[in-house]
Amino acid sequence: MNKHNKKRNVGIVYEQLVVTVSRATVEGDSARANSALRIIKRYFAPGSELYREFRLVTALANTQVKSDALASRILEETKSAARAYDVERLRSEKSRLIGEINRTFDRDTFYRTPVKDYRLLATIGSLIEEWRSPGPDIERRLQFELKLHGHLLSERAAEPEAVELRTPSVNDLTVKIMRESFNKKFGTSLNEGQRRLLQAVALGERGEDLVAELRSQREAALRALELYRGQCDSRVVEGKIPRALSSLQGLNPEDTSDANLAKFMTVSQLCDELAEKKNV
Image 1 (cartoon, helix red, strand yellow):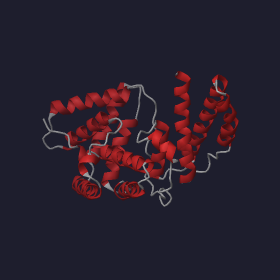
Image 2: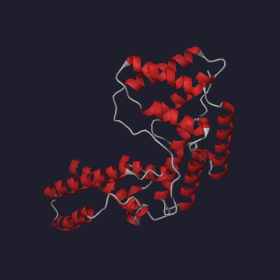
Image 3: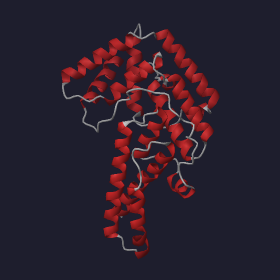
């Protein structure tokens, strides 16, 4: 049985680059964050075969349907699309991507970076390889197709499709995203809200969807803080809540600058901390 090469799995490598941006930004390592962003911008740009495969992987990972027949049709259409790519050009682009990653980062550390949905992305990458293989392992291919067929029919939270990878404006990304005390608490672990915001920075997606996300996070934080005020048993802390509420209400969700996104990163962390206090 062929062993899956995760270094050539564009879905996994892309996620590892995004995690690298996130961790480096939180740690204040702007050089590392900008290096990862530069690689994303260079290799996951519209027009490349690598970008086309990334879109294919993303579609399979994020699509959810209710019809068994439709799931089968999606797999067939995806297989046709995968086979239509310029495989030699794609192989060359992947080699250049791997080469730059190896020159830029410690390869052992980078490729061990954990990513969300690793098994799913590995299954998709392996299936695409089998579809393109001149001598596929039929049993292995069927096994992967059954897994993906089940995934397409599974009930899960809807995730937005990566519509387009635009060139991001990252000049201000080096801003200190977290104050020092927050860094100590936050470490290198990101919650889902923070991860969505940092991914938006990496992809340059600063349109209506991001504004809606910021507005949603602000409202969630306001509700959480009001609930906490009702159960707070510390007069000192309770006295500070009105000021915190005023600061939250003053946040502008239509401001998608890096500096404002940094504030919303803290808001997202605040929601998590208030939820923990509520459950104590």
